Image 1 (cartoon, rainbow, N blue to C red):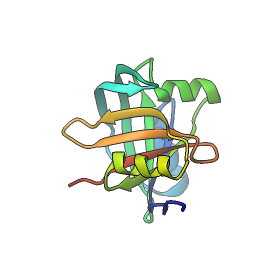
Image 2 (cartoon, rainbow, N blue to C red):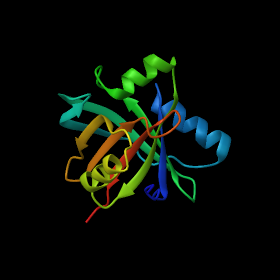
Image 3 (spheres, rainbow, N blue to C red):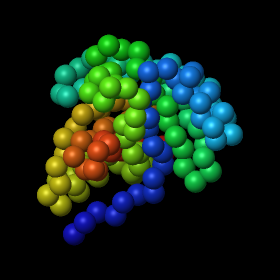
Image 4 (spheres, helix red, strand yellow):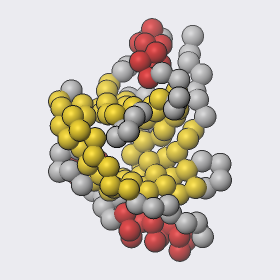
Length: 148
């Protein structure tokens, strides 16, 4: 039996220049990008290897959902890989909140779905997110644990 798809929370775009991308959205679509936050995820699991991952993040509220702008800071990261593989900016992921990531992954496995874990990271101050490849046609899927 297929799993229900949670409501889309945001679309993640990886960009080379977060300031320029935010200004472009503001000019073209009359939206305001939120503040830019530099985050480091110590000892994140990226393709099964532990490394410190750093990036800049900003959210744009579109009303029904959000757009997340991400600029890599770390040289070794899924975001840098994305920019290199795609020759520049683009849609990286579709993000969904789930109650518990591990439970949702178990349900995917039980349903026979591939669970190709690209990234598993803990947000500073709490919270966890993962990127899964092979569940969408193109972008990776991000699962975010629902804040308690």
